[in-house]
Length: 460
Ligand code: BG6
Image (cartoon, rainbow, N blue to C red):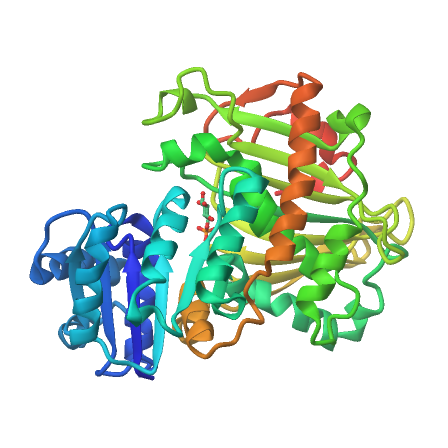
């Protein structure tokens, strides 16, 4: 496909680690043709050659098809670096001239890979250029600092580009095993028929990270784990697991319905709904307030007032500086009786892509009793499967280029999850509940275990 891509934030983390590797993969797959073009915009002063030298090691390290760089030089011919202060309206005219000169394409994508406070400025200035006509705008959370901000930003983007041209990315929706969840439900009657409150006792969703806030202290200290991970990524997974009719095409609408069924926040019960933590040493991170009470860990116990899920807790947790990096969803089935272990279906999203089913069998030989055993499938352990599985951003960029918005987030979903999360946070704050410190390399503070009872023994 002949694609022109304009990236605001060409020297940032997102561009180097995710976007350029994704574009390289698309180039190798011949989804991006030799007549495509990429303009990377940054404030630093680089020539095209210097910029290309800068991104080459990132592509090598992070692109799934980047082990072999024999086609890197031809890929690099698509790239132009453009230095610009995007807060200065007068600099957009030169960008327009460059785009007219270098970049004629059938599909034009504009990625806002910058801090959210610049989204509106860029969108409003860029929309005035002739090259903006028919362009598709991609952006990722946070969509502002408050819900009100998010609404203003959304109105401004829709007025500037038209609602069909806005693609809100939640990159978890591009992950292989998140995509697989719907198929697991709709094609396996053994799960589909048991996917409800009569057979399931709890659903657990974890996204644990070893890294801290790295270079993003300024942004993160304003956001915190709940807005950074729960409101978007974990809520997306929760609603995909919970939706009522996985075989119907109305997935996005059903996800919103599930969000609306979240049990109302009861400020008197908030200590049983949410526990927040902060890793020791967080306050010494760069650009973090030395007295910060921002959470780097969150555990939530949520219920859905929905006929399928009445009484089933959805246990969500996420944290930085934890023991190991992994994201997974686990479905804990009800045990046959009080003496047997529950069956568990674990869907591991990363770092490997795996599915495990834990179930009971007779102890071997003449021993009495039962043992819990595992059936396992590891998709990413197979090198061919691994090499052939698109990365999340690669998938999302291609979907946007194909004008397929089905895996992008609607503003209604963002608004709904944001306003729920805001109620939780307000209730937590007004109840004066502490943000509990936890040591690095631990999976959050001990206080969270209480919330996860009686299922905490099944957490990894
Ligand atoms: C981002 C968050 O959306 O997701 C980061 O802003 C987090 O704080 C990242 O590290 C996790 O993504 P992944 O794909 O590494 O699980």
